[in-house]
Image (cartoon, rainbow, N blue to C red; front, side):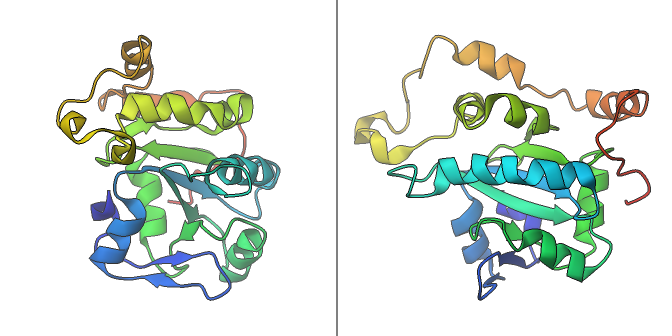
Length: 214
């Protein structure tokens, strides 16, 4: 997963804005985790409405106030803001564990093209391998809240090794009878990505257009 940001800098959304600028630091933050790429902008009303929902979703899975052990989840804000000031303002009340790309990094735009983002807000869910689990989970997060993380975790086969006996590490038992169904649900056909992007352009109701940003 860290390879997606190889040679780049990610910044923590804390008061010190710590930079993750080495392969070891990126790996420590991203490996063996589900990674959410949140495409948004402070000037987008739909993003402003969705941000508190995503903030609560993330905190309930990762903050020690809600859970004894943080979920294997990372979030990278891929800003589509027009100015750095807008980006900073949008991130001001977001979780400190969120990561974001520097405003001057062109990867912000490149990722939008790579994952066929057609509207804002959008949340791309990536497996630890870097493969796409779902191209836009925004609606699912709205409907299910933190409950959808368990579905993603099982479909992505994220392995929480600290809870396995040593002999189980190489051949873990199936986690549930519903695992095959969930894996089918979140399977993304690479050939369908382009069709998905074209189909979105025909929707009568959009949540905020990202067209022209990338």
